[in-house]
Length: 431
Image (cartoon, rainbow, N blue to C red; front, top):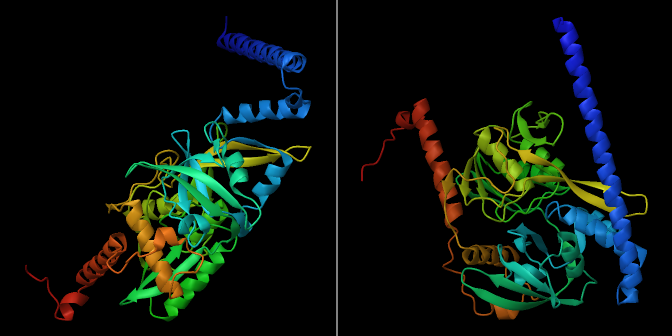
């Protein structure tokens, strides 16, 4: 038999095997569909509570279980839930001001938003939410938890939290409020041309608001920047790319997404850069997730900034929302994020170049102190049982202080390398 004939025979055999495999898969799928129909029939014929056996309730329950079995972020959303989800990135919504995710299959606080009911009540990053209004959260998907915590402004909700260090189990009653998201905060010159900007989220207005803040700082003489993304739970991928573009050269990869099939999709800087020459430090911690990790990973891989703080959360999966004909939708994990050097973010996180530990309690006090300084005094709506008598005068932001020291060190190195330092009569001080 010739080589050509042999290849044709092998190719035909492989094609037949593929066809047989598809036929078997289709047969199994049909059998399982029949099994589902049989289960629904048995439930409707025999289940004790008649008010729970409607077709919609049973099918929705089956769909929820199907998606939830994949991972904590994949969900089936009934029409009302889908509508609520669409409000998330609008910049204003009703709720508690709390970003949640799954850690070890437990509903976990990624970060409370500043100046919101959750923040003012002392909810901290890493707190486990085990009950919402008396309903255990075990087995509850993220969207259902969000739905239960949201409601009309002025209404109250009780959540039970578990905190590991120090060990604490606590019921917290919160009053829902309209949550106004301000993504860019605290822009100022710290000292000697070192600018500071804090990003608290990534939504549609974020990149423009950051650009405005950077331009104003530049007019004030900024020549170095500390970008603070601590406890920033993320948001829109497009906003993360737009923020990264301000500091990267045209054509540099910001992030890539990899699906089960097909080549990776690369998101590259389009040259909308304005501040590529600034010395930069990026601050991150365990509450930095998703879009924050994309920006941090890009800055680190391109050696554009020094990362300071603590390891990030590790939320690096991509969810696609696929609408269905009846107004419902599925939220399906379709890809994972990878940094420019091909590091997977999901469930791994980003490790800073310089690790500076800080307890979540101290970090909360740092934020509370910043709020007092920004507002002049505590907002009257702050929960008094959590803040009454707190003296924050001695609270130190050691991570920010380390960032300032690093920038000063980089400046010194650059001056020595160019000869400017010695030309000005400088030298290295001896201890």
